[in-house]
Length: 102
Image (cartoon, rainbow, N blue to C red; front, side, top):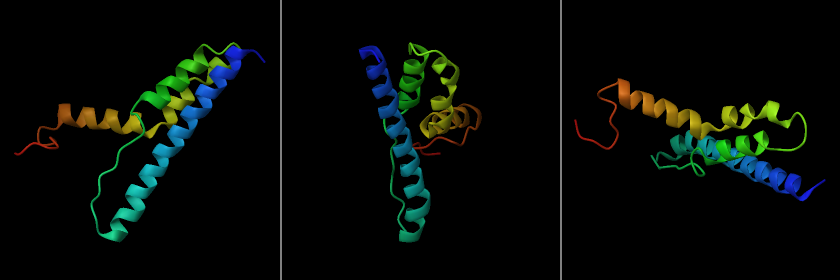
């Protein structure tokens, strides 16, 4: 195993942990906050960064066949999906402006 493979495997593994952390944030937000009666804020690990970085590392990985699964981190990263839904709602629904007074 070459140094390049070790580095790319480390990038993929670290970003997989960030994606798992994003899911943990979602779980904590939607399960613990309603029980506590608080409306606390939450934030993802660097948005878009984990899924995109892991996908790029999989695309340039020298091991054959790894590039076929470069779509998996993009599909599993919840920050990408929620950011895209939020952007679409801000563009299409006029009253969906968080942080602005109506």
